[in-house]
Image: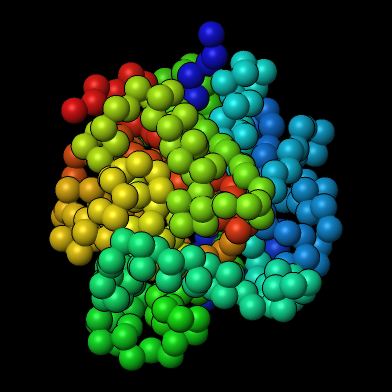
Length: 385
């Protein structure tokens, strides 16, 4: 039987500005130290370290897991590297969880980061047939397809952008704080890729996120309530094949099905209290509500429009502000998992959803082809509604 796994420590770096005043090593160490402090542990208590980040080309540092050993107390200890494009942060957290569940390691530090101020993301992600059109240029036609298929009105994307940016004002780690954002400001911002406006798109951030994961025995010793990892799943599909549905990828559907089955969830819309979804462009909120079986097809935008995904709604999405407010690519997926864990621990501060006991953390990457998701809960055996 697999060991129980729980999150007992959480740490992030400050996203308020690009961290030109700190080295890459300092950036990741800062997040690691905060997570260890939260767990009241030291580097000497770690059995293994798992690092995730987006392509090495973003900073031009090859195999950073080697150069970061000193900064993360990993000298003489197993250090693992994970990469699955933009979903890498969540994939990294899941990989760390499996190490604890295997019984081989008791306490594992997992960390994701990106220091884009030292690199060139457009160059690193461009080239070839893409012509450096950027992620937005790739996803925009699929978003337009969703709008046509679902009959969604154009203001849905604007509403998501306003909601997430206002939520971020309660999050001290959010890169963007925009208390004066409005529907009109989003609508009037420059059109980058039809139908995406500038304020419907994610920023480019520096930052790191870290979690300390441990087994049941370690969770009992934790100074604060743990977040129990109830289930996790990862799925991948090829980016190009005849008939591929880029609006609702099969891998995303399969990932959600596997996750809910493992967690014993039969009605995710009712049984999950809060979700941190990877939404780098505003329209992906309703798209993933449908793509991960939280609602029926063509119903996701209606949930958004009715206010169900707001902090006070029936199914809160991204109370932290989400990727629309902080996007250090290699850390963004882990932050979704981390924020979900914070919710069920009751430590989300101004972003806290009252009574949150079960939370979903989610990330996707590549050409909407990599998916990684987990369910965390305040109890090791949650009682669903």
